[in-house]
Image (cartoon, rainbow, N blue to C red; front, side):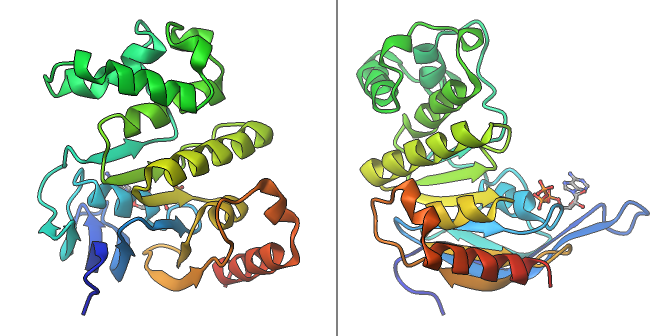
Length: 255
Ligand SMILES: Nc1ncnc2c1ncn2[C@@H]1O[C@H](COP(=O)(O)OP(=O)(O)OP(=O)(O)O)[C@@H](O)[C@H]1O
């Protein structure tokens, strides 16, 4: 039974790669969870437990071996234009400016770009890149490139934002900054979000709920509500409550 406001519903989904061959890998074992409209939910678990596999299936870029995925009330059959995706590598086009990179999804969908230039420019301003619209990726730092990727994921106003460890290649200070930028953008634009990370502190800082996965074959073994009010500041990371939740999650992952 799922609630009416459940936006993403994963129902007994399992994934086996190369079934029946010597390379068979049981990546995800039957697991169920849901994400409500407007919620920020993180999948947290050890390396190789199937987090990316689950995210790719929600994106429609991979298919479950068994079980079903529903997004916005529809069974997931193919990638949706309404889903925005961010990966660890921002994969910007090196010969295009920051603004042109943000607008690239419209070109990829053969849609006119001009009506969206204002929105793309506004997004770049919102993430602190006001003076950098015409810069090429090589003229931007790693954190700035991920800011461009956030704008690109948001430019066509997706209803669902999927993020696979988008900040794991960044240094700790830039990563904190990016968490703040992402929180602000998510707060301003309120998309349903599913995020994947190894970082316990990042998961707790960003999320409404953290879903803890078991080692491979992965499944969700605990659903932890994160009680902090929004907007959040980095200072919550110094509170006893924050550290108590992190300790609980660390303990849960290692057992
Ligand atoms: N296309 C594929 N073909 C075969 N095996 C795969 C494929 N994709 C993933 N796997 C395997 O499935 C398992 C889960 O991988 P997945 O990338 O989903 O884990 P993860 O939790 O995201 O890992 P990490 O945190 O290290 O990125 C791994 O053992 C991986 O080798």
